[in-house]
Length: 417
Image 1: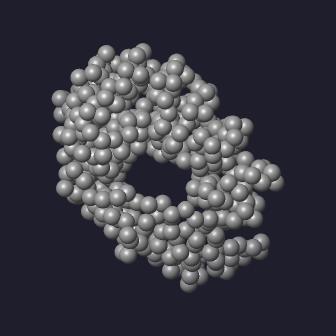
Image 2: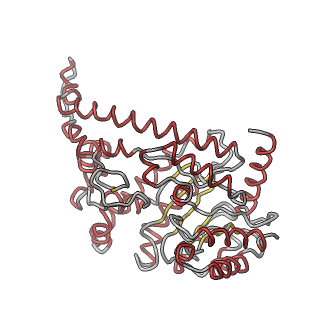
Image 3: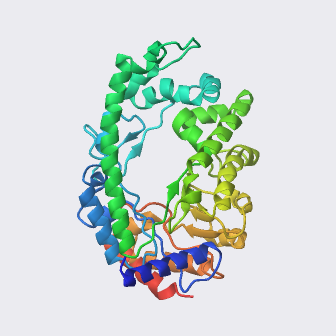
């Protein structure tokens, strides 16, 4: 990194770190979550994130070179469309997938499915790896159904016959397909690293260095589905299973994130998108016991390692604000989609840094004057005393260019302390 950009990198990082620690930097850190808009406005598309890494990456570089007020880049890398085609991924539909109705300029679409029945809780909890091999993976990735036959029974191990479930014809076909998937994923990973480094060399720290999920969301998103987890939530006989599953997933996430204790990274933040805990999704007691408690277990492990949990709440979250104060001071970053930010600042201002809430719909459909007014209001409500980072209420996929320009101009004019 050149001396000039190294200095910019350090200034931007310090600005964000100061805000997270509830300090007052020279100006409000600007970290808008730019999603596929950085491709759209630079001659690329969301489809390129899956199939044309160079075009998508160059678009990200172009966007940030034209928007130096950003203190962090939110480029999250590439996903291989070919790998997902090979796996026959059932959880998502994505731009460029053969036969898709998803626009080239739209993000991927999640297709929730029930990959674990209510009756299968004991099997999943008793033998997680076996359940994933024999049940979950064949359901979520049908092209790997050959793994379903890998099952061992107690026997005397005197010869290699014991290994036969591993080298059946069906398993061999699955291994071959896995090798093809791995090769495609490796291409996406290498390209991601290349463009992450380019943005670093331009003086932009990354927003994230890892990703996790609340254990309850893992259970609801990927195993039971929203309707399935609602059914479990209202059945008293299932409460113990839900708690046990969430505790298992919390321990697994802590284990998976261990690398952050030792990795030499300039930024150590882990992103948690909160999907199923907004106002009205469960009562207060259920939220504390089933959602917050296992999530906090992961958060506290990260904080102990010097890592910042970046908690990205989704939907209305006003009834949860008091619960969110249950963390060490200046160690957590909270993002909001839909709350009264002045009230969030009042409740959380002495505990954690807050960000978010500028409507992306306003940037896409609103008037320039409305964008300026809303940006100024957020600054007036959240700037006092520090502990604030500017962001949208969600991921930006489209915007009127003049609206985005007006937002940055307003931040530059009124965002200084």
